[in-house]
Length: 193
Image (cartoon, rainbow, N blue to C red; front, side, top):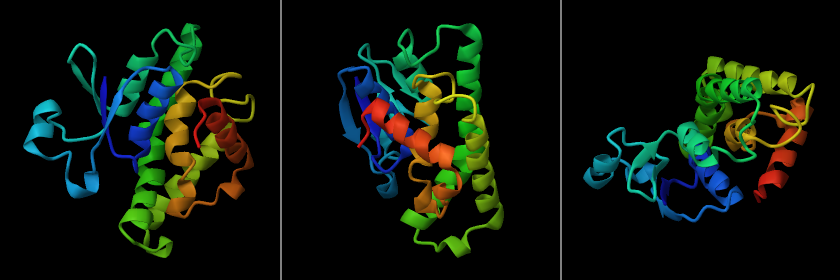
């Protein structure tokens, strides 16, 4: 399997972490999005959306979108709950991550860390919604150690990717102690340095 990804992207790293956790052999193809490497004719022939991550499976089929990829890789593993309701809760968190967390936390991080904006220059709504997403995570970690039960799962992988670097977008994880402790648990379970 080949994984096309940019190491600065949480969406790409979650694919790498799942592959490593499951001990799946892969070749990592570093694809620098800041240099437009996902917009070349060669890349667009593989993925017309021009986005990373993307994998080329062992049988040659391409697959894009981080959460679709990690779900495919993790089928029938301990990262996906066997119980149908818990699996649906996992998907609930994963869909929420792409719609209500990543567009704020990751986008703020990009503007501050890579585009050189000061936190004070960020759109107030972006910051407000990012903090709202972190509060939602804080509230979701009241009843258990992980997002769905007492073991690390795909929901945790999906959400830890940008949460662990939220400070790079100006967010203070000190305001969310359950989230901070959860990040450490997920990093330890996945062996993320």
